[in-house]
Amino acid sequence: MLISKSVLLSQVQNKSCGQFSCQVRSLFLCVAATFEYTNNNKHNINFIRQYHSLRSNLANNNTARLATTPNASYANRNYSRFSANTILTGTAMMKLTDYDCIGFDLDNTLLRYKLTEMVELEYRVLSHFLIDVKGYPSKYLERPMVENIDFLQKGLIIDFARGNILKIAYDGYISKACHGTRQLTDDEIVDIYGKDRSWQVTSDFCKNLLEAWHGPLADDMRTLLDYFDMPASLVFARIVDTLDDANGNRPLPKYNIWPDILDGLGEIFTWEHFENDRSKYFASVKSDPGKYIHRSSDALKKWLTELRKHKTIFLLTGSHVDFASFTSSYAFGKDWRNYFDVIVCYAKKPGFFTKDRAFLRSHDTEETNEEIDPSKLKLGDVYTQGNWNGLMQCLAQKSKTTTPKVLYVGDNLIQDVYSPNEYSKADTIALAEEMMAEGMTGRASEHKDKRLLTSPLWGTYFLASNDEPTIWLEIIRKHAKLCVPNLDFIAAHPIDQEFKIFTQKMCTNGFYPNEPLCFTK
Image (cartoon, rainbow, N blue to C red; front, side):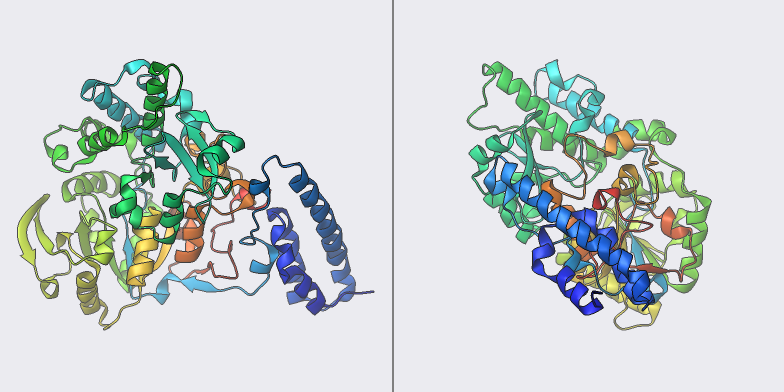
């Protein structure tokens, strides 16, 4: 007997399908596509037979897996974020030309770094600061970063007091954890964080992401959001190992390491240290920019030039104007400012989207103390600090629209994706180089820094254990329209190119050019 489309869809969309892993997605999509484009039942029947067979096999496999999982609390978590009932629907699209104004972050967005070289430099400078200035033993800190390169991943969370590093799911559930550099077993995670593998701090963080930025949660945890603070996880872990060794290979009751690491990050990235070369990180980049920074492609430059002919383009970066000018001049050329109508540096995101800081005028590569009324902002000038509402006043003048429709593009998921979308209602595009490093469907992994960006220890950046979305994937699909490995993938197309986007019903469609391989394994 042939099964009707409505019956099949009702079975696929039934919540009981939520337990199935990503393996069924491609088949479900094939079934949906078949129904969408043909009414030929003879053509459909093969897909339907495969559907029933796979559905039965997966159900049996899932039952067996649950029965043999040692930690019941770990196995019995129910989830349906990426089950068939969230994907078998229509397709929504977007075009850049739908927007009046388009803004870009700079670092790791318009400007790409040679990540392995950059992260190694950051690790080396930070560890030497902690040895030379803070007095930590060099036993572990001086070891090459590459010895523990599997330990590194963007998006890890540090539990200051316990000396632990965590990977969490969308709701704060702790899927993996390490004490120092030693991976904790499932039973150890339960012993520390309870049978629900939940820490109130991370659970609260998932409910309000800015609480860990400047709220009370910042006293207990740190999220390592991008490639600038990524090596701090290994520095922290190696110091924990050092202290445990000195304590007879036993954990301390409490660790107080993070304030020293924070001082080290300040020493590296404080903007005044760029000009006076106090920061060995800045000094190294200045002396040999080609070692750490990619030149921008001609295709990206032409695309930006064409985009500016039709739209108002702005640069909104957290980098100070002197560092932004130096790196942009190397990547784009001395005329880098000509790609933008408005440039705002040292924007202090995410506060730029939530606070009312004054704009300050910039003179050449220096910030002045002269405050500028938002209504007096001029196109073509460079400003520092400021706020979103003031910037919108300026952009409205250029776009000749009282409420311009704005798109913002960036890599930092809290600063550049969550905050502008949640608090300023701008649409966003997220960048994640992990897509290319881990590989995408139909495309082999081809990232130069694959070894750094793929971790056998932590697993895929996008999924937690049991195929649940990480908090970072949850931000991407909820607050971004699109996610790409880098902007060259978009710049390869005309500015009016249509792209599939994330929606509540289409939770992987927004990955371009293809979804990460982890969704099909």
